[in-house]
Length: 327
Image 1 (cartoon, rainbow, N blue to C red):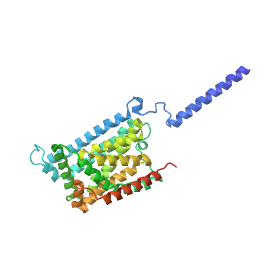
Image 2 (cartoon, rainbow, N blue to C red):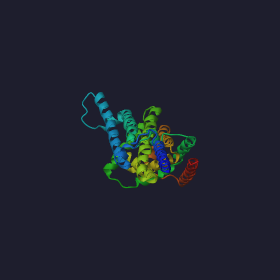
Image 3 (cartoon, rainbow, N blue to C red):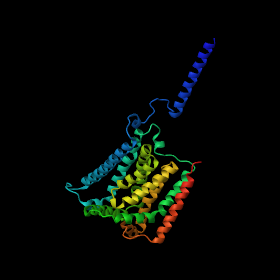
Image 4 (cartoon, helix red, strand yellow):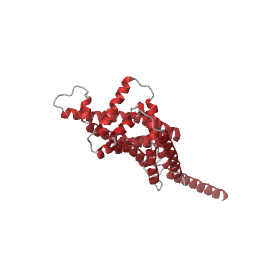
């Protein structure tokens, strides 16, 4: 009898342990499936490598489709066959070029990245990309927007430092032609709202989904948060293919990545990105001469302006840190 009772007790313990393990697994994997792992984890594929591959592929697709839209348009409107590259034709139809760029960003940096994210997570894509908000999100959005404004003199200084690095004449000429296109578009006869959409809104959503959403999280899973913040910022700087501005662009990327990590939300970074790009459009529309002079970064900002910028940025970073402190 004692032996039977002991066996019964052991059986009950085994059942309890089994149920506890089952419940524990259920809590970790709400769907209840044993294979609840991302594609990358199931196949032993490094998350950082997947992120690097997608950065390259998405960039190439973005460039290819944008170029095809422009070339296709020029073929359609030309009475004669287009036999070579004519910069003047591009300048005359800059709006089409920016439409092509916006379309490419939406398709590949935005929508395709959303799909690719499924390879790195078994959870919802929105959660992985930090599409979330709570009571702290709005204050951080406002603080980040103000931070980007206050940070502009520092960006100006970093741009000047970057410009002191010697580059080959051929590359310098390539960047000069890029700057001329941007200048012509920002100061040309365009609707300001449409320009803000192409230069401000679309990049602030699509580039953030790619870099502060997918790339940051994928690198974080492989290397930890601080390496992810720095490397994702550097990739963001290189993505723009402007080596004379890679330092300030990378610093902006690092700054926004830190905000996303602290707030656990991508929305403050989108807001900061939009303020940075959209502010440039408004400045170029209202004060074109001043805006172009600042873009050339031929002079340093004043010492007092820099000190105010550094002090203001430090205070706002502290506010963001306090706002996002774990409760």
